[in-house]
Length: 75
Picture 1 (spheres, helix red, strand yellow):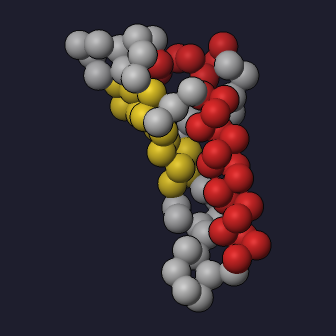
Picture 2: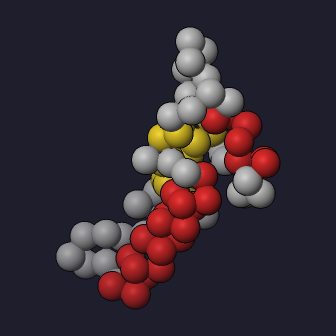
């Protein structure tokens, strides 16, 4: 896992992260026709999610992803 990607289906989604006090994304992709967006966060250290990955690190990354998903109200 190298990126955390969030699909936000509401107008103004590209800038909602500021109002929600979320960390700034590394990349924002906006649909100009409806204002929906994808916010992408690059992990400083990738997390191995294969059978060779460490369970504790995978669970930690999943908890961060879940927390950001809830904060951003994303898919």
